[in-house]
Image 1: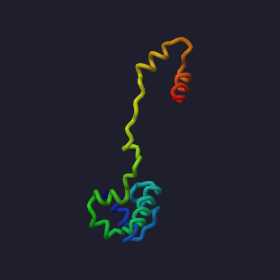
Image 2: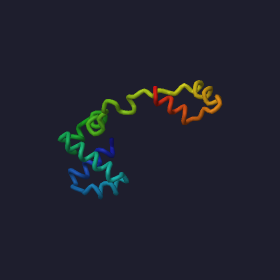
Image 3: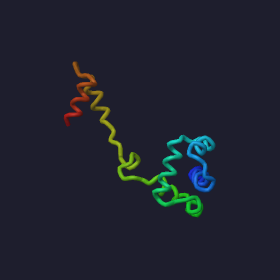
Image 4: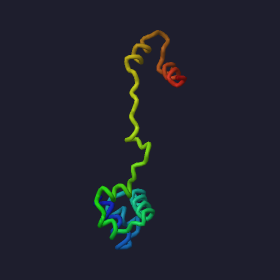
Length: 103
């Protein structure tokens, strides 16, 4: 959260450009832009951000959207089935994949 606060301080208090901020903090330009745009969307300036807890600031700048990859449980393939099917004559990975797509 230090870098988020520092981006906001440099942008709102010291009126540095996004390019200057990205260079001085060794962040990508797009990361700096995202932080600043999300702060503006939440009517957040450095003085307000300074008073917020790390977790609250994190929630405002990087909201956890439903369906985010971390929320989705991965379904692992049945490897035993795949191996047994590939042992059959004339069975290829491509054919196996096409069967999977049809299901």
